[in-house]
Image 1 (cartoon, rainbow, N blue to C red):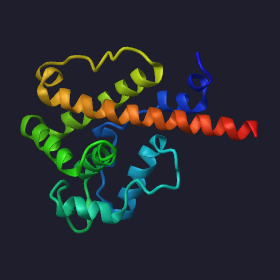
Image 2 (cartoon, helix red, strand yellow):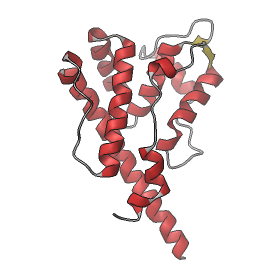
Image 3 (spheres, one colour):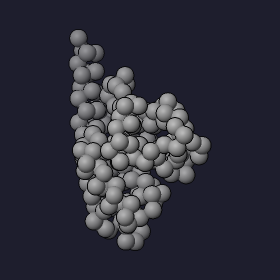
Image 4 (cartoon, rainbow, N blue to C red):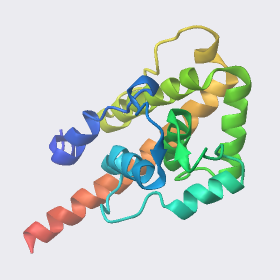
Length: 182
């Protein structure tokens, strides 16, 4: 086992829990609250903790591009928060147009709650696979969704994101180690 595999960085990644739909806030949130929830939830994935992973301008653009349903009375509900969490992750490896297509495909075939929870399951399975360097076990098969084209596309997108994060975290670790040696 390498030093990186024993590091705090890997430990933090392996212990990450992606909040399921029923764990998201039930109250409608204002923009600042939404940004706070998304940034706090996803902070483990970003090397530069000062980086703005989601801004009000980004959210407004997602609404304009019809990737995200518009807020009601300047407040965002649980469904919109789920969309934003997935969007913020997937925009690291897919274009907004591709994400829109993936979301549309999923929403045409499955309820949002089921799709979002599958996304969370896939994220956690991918983290375990990539950071433990194990064969991808995938998410437990549970019928049509698990073996559908949509599930395969979602799985591929999530694995792409986690592999990207793995590279960034390895480089972060190596940089930290070099600084310790100086």
